[in-house]
Length: 371
Ligand SMILES: *Cc1c(COP(=O)(O)O)cnc(C)c1O
Image 1 (tube, protein in one colour):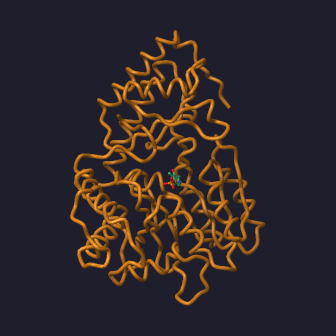
Image 2 (cartoon, rainbow, N blue to C red; image 1 turned 90 degrees about the vertical axis):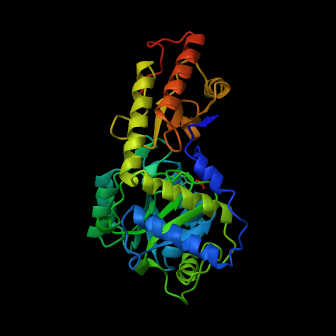
Image 3 (tube, protein in one colour; image 1 turned 60 degrees about the horizontal axis):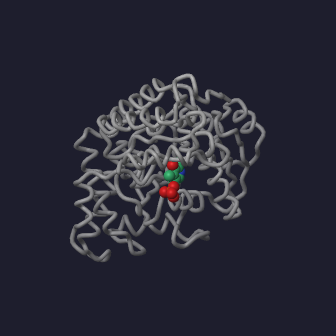
């Protein structure tokens, strides 16, 4: 079975094998060495100096990293502006709301880009804003938000930038220094090709809460993790096997040439998917250039329901991803993350073509309904 889903991703043989590493206590020196190696390699992907940035490792899925970032880095008297154009932007707001963090929301329809002029107007009138939180790659639609421009506005207004890069870290460009990123949430099992269970926040050290400041959280307290991990320890049990897999996946990424190579590899696969499906008359949700290289969304062929399409592809060995919310009945999503080859994509495209033929669908019979 080939997973074309945005996490968990198809594992390489060597990452799968790494899961069988020796049993290990998280209180032993071998674990601390493993932890230190992963923290170093994560910073290395974006060339970040360990004096100014820390990779803080958590046992949990990507949402744990989002929650740790928002609930640890925004102080009690902080006020956050949250930009939303999809499920994950809305999740950032939900986290702020549950923790009773004062926040404002600037929401756009899911298929639309962040409105930079509205953002400018908001920043000009909003008082006491300390932070802005935004999703880098909004996996809901595949849109890569314009982080460089958003970061410019934050710098002008001296607002700390918090980024959910869970589905872009390791593949898309992130300029931590130039964009002034204070916190960035990521995960092992998307563009890094590890297994689910480890997530992390890359924090600028001067953005960490000072020790002794009242805490909002226990398990997700980034300050506590950062201090323990800097001291060669861990506050709680970590998922040791998921750490093994992540360390191997990071070594594989380095050997492949790092983030730039991964981006190029995804770019080629995404172009192959896009041109292949377009050739079959299937229409992309977003204009070319608006999508990440990580995931692209497409309208369903007209007259074929998602579940029919999904099940027919699954019988042929491919798992695709549904749309969410209002888009659930209209789109499907194809991710290019994981150990996927051009040959896998070619076979996937043949399977789509065969299914469309079975359903009597031709190039003219597609739902081109644009927004
Ligand atoms: C996958 C994802 C998450 C986290 O999802 P988990 O299921 O908790 O791993 C967060 N943000 C974005 C943008 C994502 O794509």
